[in-house]
Image (cartoon, rainbow, N blue to C red):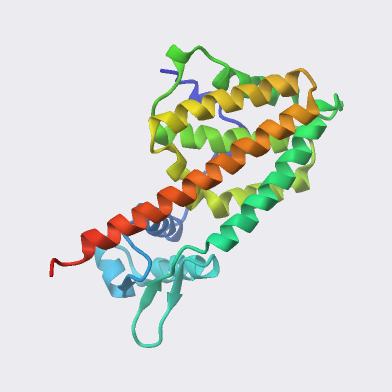
Length: 242
């Protein structure tokens, strides 16, 4: 198994300082992503305080943040409700992601002196490895995949473009991780990333962009299919037999 975790690009690394509200936010978002909280579920702040063993302030801060991102809504005198996944918004974010990454790849293929070659070599060390050295851990590969795409944009040398791309990445993370719940998708990710990197190294801009767009579109379609299936299963499991 490939374990060069220390080579994950800078853009994929989490900030060092975290608050209690950050922890609550991450837990609730993981509950939504893992379908422990299903669209339509209702809950109170007190219930979360008891379950997570925290005070009301970090719970409220986390919920307000999730509300701003469109995952939950507050209901007058009846607590909070998990909102349905907004696939139209996710598709718009994926479109924006394609524009940013395609532009970055074109610059990477151009031979521009601003391109961060060291960052590209780090990606090659992770993705261009023999099959026997590949990771089969979905969580790990999901993290590396995010790092791969962020690093492509970062390596192009435009800090503002990289900043916007990181914001898009954060907003789609909740569903994107589902693409690595199957081993065939993990294997496909290695193959597709490898081909993209090889095209970049050969300065084949049109081919690199074509491969990148196909890779993102395939992942997007797979994620939507898995999300709908998981929501169906979660709802069926929570419905008492009649």
